[in-house]
Length: 136
Image (cartoon, rainbow, N blue to C red; front, side, top):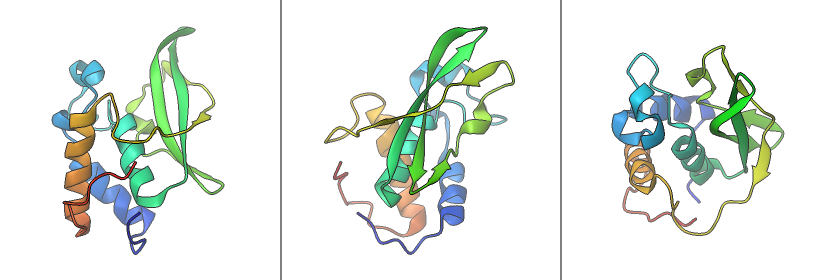
């Protein structure tokens, strides 16, 4: 775990500034653009926020016209749900209630490169040791 000297507001600004096409989930890359930088960033963002603050990982489904089209990840810190990427969705996309999901040990199996890239950028901007390996 990292020192908790950062505020959530500061970390949010840092994470948002670190998003780019190379941190986007490849499944969403065709829809990613600088006008919607949160698109495809939910999984890696939730993991990096979990690295920094702990808490719970939440997973919901994305629905369009009643059909599941994907999944959405966010965090719960204590009693507060924190979703830094909710604004990626348009009014036609509905998110179901989140279910708590245990984080498996080790690095993520999906989007590992995107996670590593985002995590490295965020830790560097926060002044943390970027050589620290993911403990989760």
